[in-house]
Image (cartoon, rainbow, N blue to C red; front, side, top):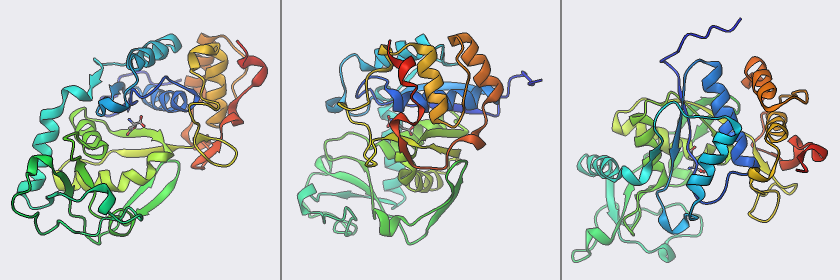
Length: 304
Ligand code: GLU
């Protein structure tokens, strides 16, 4: 018997960027985060990461929300939009600047090395006369590796100095970088476990670093295999990334479960949910960072 009393100690979330419709890959992240929260009797939140207006696809946030609803995934609190959280991000970057852990950077993208590792050019100040308002803000990382144990991917060790160097928290165009926004918002919402695709595993070290410097607690992390093409590249807009709206929901759910290592029998949508809630086990999720996108597909059932 499952104990169904609410567990205020677990808060999970799904945090899509509205840069396209919910496709098979994002469905697996929504599903896994939802099942983790539900089987822990915790809360499941939805946060729309609309930080970057130029990359937004008009209407996609509403379509993602409607698609999740169509599957039966309802968040436990009002949906949060990152576009409403600018003040909180400014406060966090100001704190990092004031404590000497962040600095203004006037380097153009072109002047940076191809490795992507920041050479430290503006660490000791920018030339007088350059307007800070037009600069990026970077944080000063040290040679201190970050370690954490991911529920699926196991022990991780990330050395920020050799993997990315001083990284950007505010872009020169004034937009907040994903790394800072996600940390500020996960803490604000009291998220205790982050479930998302392994394409963000590399970002986790930067996020833990920011949590430590901002005095925020570090949630647990569970990084799922990402649906990829056979050559390992991520699903693109063209290939295998049809909106899940075009698929029958029960079959799409069953395919996503299969992709995540759970073989459900063919049932109705309600029956598939019941099966999933009774059988969900993160230990069954394949310990891979990418998986062929059709590993979970049941072709004949996916033809609507
Ligand atoms: N907004 C990010 C994305 O859609 C995910 C952020 C996260 O889960 O931390 O790729």
